[in-house]
Image (cartoon, rainbow, N blue to C red; front, side, top):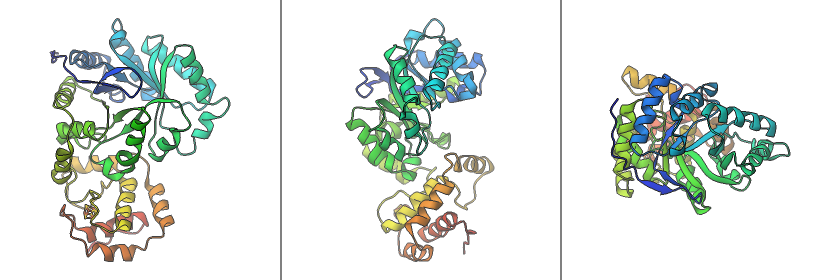
Length: 371
Ligand code: SF4
């Protein structure tokens, strides 16, 4: 299929890695769901657009993504910075997975290998004697890996990892829905990574597909919110070209990001913009609702496709129990929060009292009682 041949994707120096990376990286997760033939077309289109960064993981389709990407890159491996990930926790398992990855990708090295989806408390295992860090560090010394990196689905893990892992870069989600659910990402994690010279690549710029109606705004928002490179898991040539065109338009500046917060159809009149008008306890309750279900379940009418997507994505990060536990530990009184909400006039036209009823019911495992 014909692809754009402009080769003009902007590049950026990724942290202090010394590598010039195109600001659009191709994600490997969605290569699992398409045939090898389409993967080849997607990679053709990505390279024709000038892209030079492809990432995947051993666990994506139990190696299927790596195999398809490896096949598609045959003879042109040197055109891209190639990354994979391992979820292994021991040195032995990490080494075995890395060797499987290299074989599937048909290469003798990857530029980066990520500790994949590090969970709370797992850094102790990874950094212990005989842990995965030991195995991957040895592979770095042997030239099989250019640098180490990480991803996690619980943001505070990044802050802990900065002092415990020798990171060249991180992969973290950054989009205009989840930056409101997890403000720790734009407020603390990304600035701290950049202060340390750790590269910042951003997964989920379209919030796992939820922002599909707003591709240009989502891509530009992510680039403007601190992501050096967005990793977008496109699965068609058309999507590659659409994302590349958005990246070429450049990062959203502060005014455009505010405009997106104000007008985005995807945020509507339910997602809290964390504007500061509510008392801090109420804002924290809405943040915890973001952890609970990404503020996806709003008890409003949606068309069937939108509703199905919301339900599917609501608990993607598995935060229900964690959010409820944090809410209980904070000792908030649901009645007081609802009473406080009734006094707030939201500049984003959110019915704050109604939202407080919903959020507190979710976080206390009560039936949602709307009047
Ligand atoms: S006023 Fe609206 S946007 Fe601002 S903190 Fe309250 S609910 Fe969120």
